Length: 242
Image (cartoon, rainbow, N blue to C red; front, side):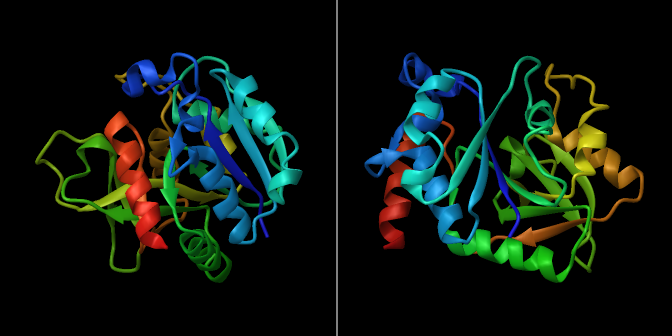
């Protein structure tokens, strides 16, 4: 079973005053820190070795989860300095990750243990350089639009496309499985027009090199907890799962 990398370094500026003294990933959802839901669902999917990437108020996360033993997992930590971006976040964890493929998830994305099991099973049956979890949305403006061919191979990714311009409803969900090859590409990232070192750019470079990047369609619950109103939305989603 591969290890998992959880990206939990950002402050979460869209949460406004809620993250003044609390890292975004420790905000409560259904009575527990958001990050605890991610950790325990990965555990329930059979993942026992976790790397948590911290940054803003890292001590709050590290003191809560420690070595992971109270949660039935083994946790180590990596730290993200500047520069910002999801691509630089993955790259910052390179020394903490082993030499095998690893699952990566944004720490503010909530899904079910079944979703993690399904993407791991997909990768085991059809190994590739990168497997991207996809969720269906009306318009992927706030995420990344993903275009696939008939075989499920990804042919194009567009980060935060202008509203109404996408001809796909598939969104990059924030859940991935990467081979260690990803670090060759995150090492070469340059700032995007938004000033960030973006994971989408690394994946686009992989596609340009003819690397195999596939899509995995996530079924069931999924929520990106990015704004204050999403906390209650995510809580209701988790309650409905029961």
